[in-house]
Length: 422
Ligand SMILES: *Cc1c(COP(=O)(O)O)cnc(C)c1O
Image (tube, rainbow, N blue to C red):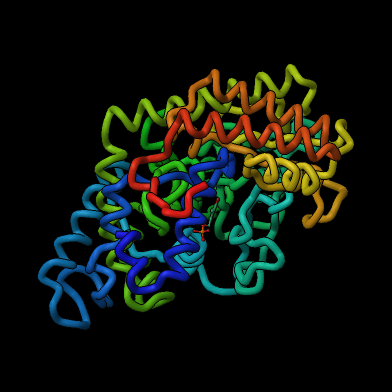
């Protein structure tokens, strides 16, 4: 399909080629990124992009919904089965919108929400000060334990008792350990708050049964569909039957207009893919790879927040190495290893130049990397960190990365023949 684009828009076609080459010729360690299957790619690039479908199956505002109703119902049913949830809404455009819809479904503007502080691993939309969620709602962020980097349930309960939030948000974007949603649920009950669990990062681990699901404890579960879940870019809400109407209303007409039907189509495909033994094996391997990478980094003297990982993600505390996160991320990028710099809990440095580096294994695992390659990545990171100002060594690492990448081709539809290939 991309090659056909050459004929119509050679300029954009060339840019897509360049991006495909970048994605295939580098090691993608950004924990929120992945490579979707050919089936997901085809569904999201299909004619369903042409259809408006405001409303819900059987209750639309436009005609011509003979097929879209079936597609959305299929996506809903597959999501409900996969997550063992009473109700699924597959319309949110993204995880951010899904979160706002979850809050809007449960509470009124001005009421109090309590989510993990962004600088400690929470997401912007959990009420961080620059997010509109902190303007619409009164936000009381909770920290992690500054010494261990771990969730501190005593502290969370203390804050909850003091501030009496209407919603407690459990879930994170940069937390390397399993989250105990049951305890979170107990605290929420104690203060008569709703619990919204945001599993955007770990949804793939949850459906594979590697991490415990929040579905039994949370009033609403929010997720993206494109991270470990390996679907198209989108969001999704799961909830108990009692909240179903409110959740649907909050998404449409509360926040959105027409849903992206092509995305819902691809979500349906991804939900079926995630409901397989292959996917369970994939999710297990994600964690095995993260553990192998973490172990090797520790051996090389890197400090890891919480001392390791239970999931797909590792947060390196670079203070002892005396290298700013941004400088290392940029050097690694020149060596074809793509990461993101990140704050560490209690980071004294500003968010644009923090002391942490966040890495993760979902994308490399899709590519077929196992523990051996994960350890090799630790070697690359060590070499770049130790030679941060030596461009010829960084270039040499880049060549080795390219060689490794060539042995683990990305999903086949990614390889786009390029007449200019060097
Ligand atoms: C990625 C993420 C989101 C936001 O998802 P977008 O699709 O980027 O809007 C929300 N919550 C958490 C925990 C995330 O990691």
